[in-house]
Every structure is written in structure tokens, then in C-alpha cells.
Image (tube, rainbow, N blue to C red; front, side, top):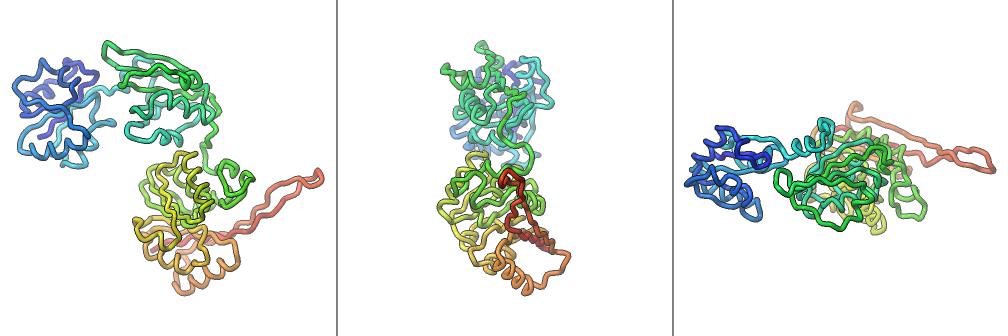
Length: 412
């Protein structure tokens, strides 16, 4: 058996009798230096070893000892942002026995005397700092687990970048040790702080009424995107009204793989990835200026689940995983080739949505459909004509935009 024992804040008295028995019968006990010292009084003749670096090397070490009982020491609850997830990916559940304990987050909120059932828990440990961006909103409480690249000052600076300079932050250091300390800051103040913090910490954030500049509902304003023109909201992006219609047809699903072909400056790709953080989206674009805007928009909105493919379609699609959903926003005059390839790769019950503006595109699409002879129930046609208000000679006028045709095809 592989026993995984959570230590809570490191008090040996918090361990159950079963956990102590599991440690006693294990031939090998693995833990950090601090964890092994904490349990020194409970460990007798067992072989003790520090965790390897990198930590993933613990898997071959366990496999080499598969015929013996081994005990792994964990902080808090090993099944909550702990090593349990890694072990469950490599071993059968029947090989593992977990002894959970109180998590550090429970202790942290208890120290602050704050409830945490509505708090959003975010781990930045081993993840880019900007993966925090899609979670930011007003009137929210967060608990953030960090590493050396997401220290409290960096988090505060990111909050200030998105209008949350008045957010409240508590930095809780070295819980359960003699060095335990809790500090309170406003984001603007903490971003300027030069004093280093302990390496073991949790950051709790309350945004309250901070006027976060990030949208919290679908339909980003066009001017929020970087585009290939000098006019905000103009350029090679799908405008908000078309974007909302396209996303409603695509119906993003958790865990799906999706393609955006001819992504332009990335309005659809970025918003698609932003609202579906557990999906993976590949944006295919070859135009250098639009590619640059696409990269900047990805960075701005923290959509780290968006992969950019700087190639033409269909050539740039051949190494991508099979998609569950595809959006085609541009074909470069090769609609038939792109549609053929996409239709052959699309997963069964997946959907393909294509956006046509020019009559050439609409005609080529009809020709392709005639060759496929698809039943009508697999097709969903939508024509969208949008007019936007403007002022002419101090009078309101409605200026029409180019009409757009959207077709959704479901693969039976």
C-alpha cells in the first residue's frame, strides 16, 4: 500500500490512530525535512527519505518500492491541491490510502474569522500569475495559493492593473509555526511593499466594490481588444453582436478541444477561451499584424488555455488534436479545402460554425453543402444585420454594418 498522511499544521497529536499505525508499518517514509522532523517522535526504525527534486521523480521511486508499504507525508489535506492528484494519475485507487487532515485554508480563514464557503480557491503554484485574470471580479473573496513567481506584491500589482487597487489583501505566513504572521494591505500599498514574505504563505483577497475593469458577462465591448487599426473597436475582429451569436451557436463545453480558424485579432478566440477555462482552444492565424494583436489580447485577458498557431489553414491544422467544435472566421479563398479538412476531423456530435460576409464566401459555402448533401436538421442558418447609433449634424442616425451569415452544422 501507499499511505498518504496529511499533517494539518504539523501537530502529531492531530493524527488519527490509523494514520500512526500506517506510518509504523511502512518500510519507507517520504516527506520534506520539516515534515520528518515534526514526526520524529513517531518514527522508529523506518527508512526515511526527503522528497526528490523535481517532485515528479517520486513516481519512479514509489514504483521501485511497489512490493512494500510506503508512507508519504503531506501538508493539510493531500486531496486538496496536494499530491493526491498526482498519485491518482499513476496508481490504482486500491493501491492508495488517504488520511486527510485540516487544510491550511481552513486554518487561514479561521485565523481571519471569515467564512469561506463562498470564497473562490485559486492555486497559482506552478501556474502563471496571469491565470488569475479570468477570475477577477467585484464583490469576491479569494484564497490564493502561491509560489515564488506569484508572491503577494505581484498579485497586488496585477489587481491594480485591472482597476482593483482598493482591494483588501491579507498575507498569512508560516501558519502553525513560531514565525506565523498575518499582515493586512490595500492592493496599491502592497504593490509597493519591498519587505520579503515567508515562502510558506496564503493570500486572501476581497475585491469588494473595486470597479474591476474586466467584464463578468459574455459580450466584451469591442474597444477592449487590441486590433490592427488605430481606432478602438475597429479592425479585423468579430464585433460583439456577431460574437455573441457565434458563441451561442458553438455552446462551449468544459473539457472540449476547439479550433478558431482565421482568428484575426482574436475577439472570438479570446472570449471563447475566457468563458471556458477548462477547454483548450487553438487559434489559427497567419497575418503578422493580426497575430501580434491576437497575442496581446491573449496576454491581456489571461486566457492561458488559448494556443496560437501561426500558420495558414488547412496546412496548420494537421498536428492539432481532434476538435469538438470549430469556428471558421476566415478562409483566405480556400473555403472548400478548409471545410473538407475540418469536416473530416470534427468529432461526431461536434459542431462547425462558419461566418460569411462576402457573396463569394456565401456562394462557395452553398456549393460545398450541395456536394455534402447534408440533411436539413443538421443545419442552422442565421443572417444578422446590425446598425449602430451615430451622430450626424447633431442628429441620431443608425449606420448599418455589413450583414453576416452564420451557419452551424452538427455532425451526426
